[in-house]
Image (cartoon, rainbow, N blue to C red):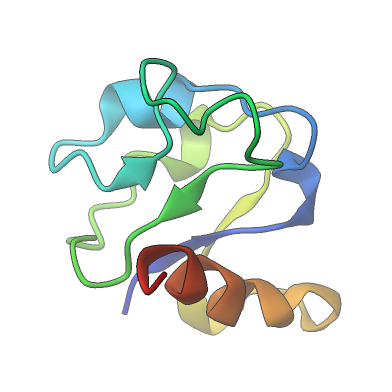
Amino acid sequence: MAFVITEPCIGTKDTACVEVCPVECIHPTRDEEDFETSEQLYIDPDECIDCGACEPECPVEAIFPEDEVPEQWQSYIQKNRDYYNK
């Protein structure tokens, strides 16, 4: 199971979650060229170690364990996967 970033991140892209991730699985970071054009941040489901360090750091409460993503944001599970499968 991985963590998933959902709709509240859109337009916010606060990188506090990036800074605490021990495996650097949240992208794009501020120094990546697609940071400005991405509407949100994404967690790589294959790299995430399910440590949960990112969840309390999110100021807009956009991060959830995959099995706890609210019904209205279920599509973000696949959206996070798709970001890494492009």
